[in-house]
Amino acid sequence: MKFDKTKLLQIVLILGTIYFLIGAIAHFFGLTIFPFYDGRLYTQYHDTVIALASLIFSIFLFTIARNPIKNIDMLKAVIISSIIAIIFNIYIISKIDFVSLGAPAKKFQTIVETILLVLFVVSLLILKPKKIK
Image (cartoon, rainbow, N blue to C red; front, side, top):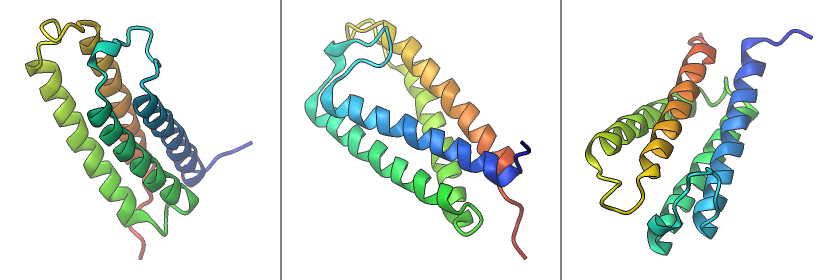
């Protein structure tokens, strides 16, 4: 079975949708996804805000996945916002002292999340439809 770039893009977007939905659920309920998750950093207010943002992002990804060509502008916005998130994560990794927060494993978790997001953005950039005439 041969996949074209649009079909592969849709698969990547659906996988992103699932990832961010799982993240929303985990943050909302304070669940453990990563084996090195540290519940001491859970705060109901902040994790609820993160859950909301993650849920909204997953809705955007699902909407784009339904028709990436029609939703090309929204795809570009998702790519830009993801790049901004990568920059923020790099800042967090370099500036936050997770040891003093009592959760040293959180740094590794943030590194893993950043790597996954970089792979996601690279996939989107490779599979993004060309400009429509």
